[in-house]
Image 1 (tube, rainbow, N blue to C red):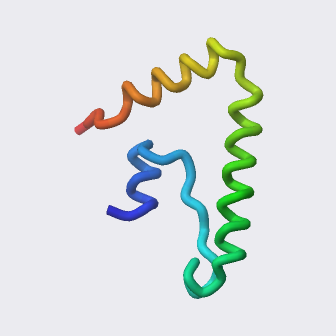
Image 2 (cartoon, one colour):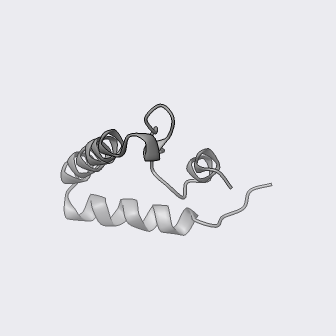
Length: 69
C-alpha cells in the first residue's frame, strides 16, 4: 500500500513530497518539508473550536475502515 493509497482511503490527511532523489538524499530538506506540513496542520486545527475539533475527529475515525462497493 502506497502513501497515495492511504490518502485516497482517508487514513492520512496529506502526503508530503520527498526531496529529489528521496528523503535519504537530503535529510534537512525532508525535515523542513515535514516541519511545514505539521505547522500547516496545526494552523488548520487551531482554527477549530473544541466542538468542531471533536466532531471532525469523530467523523474521521468513524470513516476509517469503511468499505463502499
